[in-house]
Length: 168
Image 1: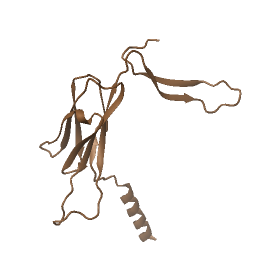
Image 2: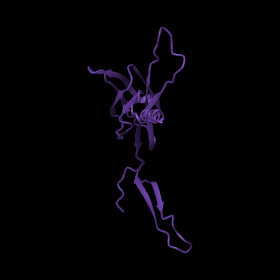
Image 3: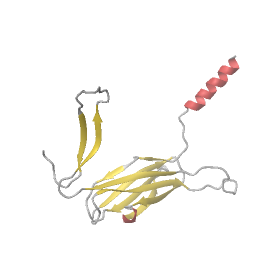
Image 4: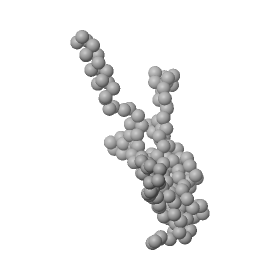
């Protein structure tokens, strides 16, 4: 019986260990403001890897002017991405992604035969305002515990996505 308890406690210890050897990035996402013609620089801290790679994707990807990986004195990597916000974007949401991955490692003179390669995507969002006044709903709530004949009250959550302020 003590041997069983020892094995069970060892299994629980292994399952509850919070050590992860994987690529990670902070912050997890970015929202940049719409300022046509201006440049925005995004810096992402990269950890859990010795030799990261960087790629860019998305509809704003062609407008990224530079994407580089920097390593500080402590061995911590930072991805610095600069995007120029175009002046001819259509109203609505636009985005691009910063894709971070590890380079393949050669072990014992050969490439690994079994393994997994992960790409981590850090999304960067840009919302171009619509001309004049424009409302969009984000959520709709109502009381689900209604009986037939009861009055139904609901709430609609709205966000102004236009270039003009809505006062009433």
